[in-house]
Length: 345
Image (cartoon, rainbow, N blue to C red; front, side, top):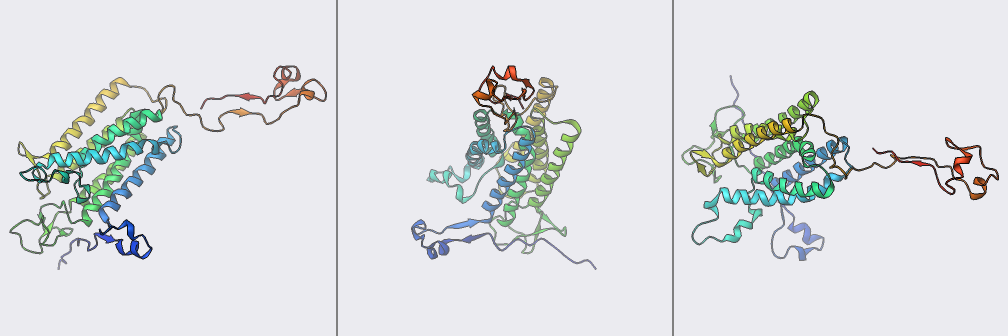
């Protein structure tokens, strides 16, 4: 006898901190409104943290200064958020541009509505600015970021699960997702208890597998000069195109194809172009993550003698026969100095 099973949607989506702010005497911060922390926001923040940690480690392993990733993401994240919002608004014009519409709502990001393809475009602009200021080559940063992006997107998709949104077509599979019939996205005409494809789960698993694919390819063929990021674009684009066609949420249609499917195809195309162009332009290995003239020299990269001598010693009054590997005669040339030989990292 088969036992019917399914994936229940979580009951918890957010928690209200208003009472806590009142209890600790911070009522002035509430100003009559509720302070609510949404699970979706926590998932996005968790993804950003994961991506930052992994990218920092990968960039440092390539010879960059520890923590330099923070100088770059301080530009990339704000630009990415703005780009994600702009893309969402432009790809859903019916929600924001109609007779009598309040155009200020295009700025109400807290009401929901961000798009990963817009985040990629805006984030790339911000990352380029951050890389220029930090002296890091843009493609070196992009390669270090590639698997971290997939981790961040996997965490973000978990937020869709908490929000009961962006699910797929009806299914009888044992891992079908339970969605309440009162959900605005619940298809009209379907009976209560209908299960749906958990597209959030498919994309999470696809993205996590992509992390392993990129790391494995790097061990085999040394993905540099933007090639790891190109693999990311191709991998994510292929997966997104598949899962997007399964979703039942409303979407703008262009030439019979959902807008985000077009975005996925463009990502695949750009990834292929980057692979071809960068392979031809840079057949050799990278020399390091920094642009020429901006190299970082790690502390302790100089060979230094801690032995010092007074003027009297160097004049011959009790001076040693040699200073380091130099003779006492050569030591007289540079009195009051330590022996230092610079060594570039």
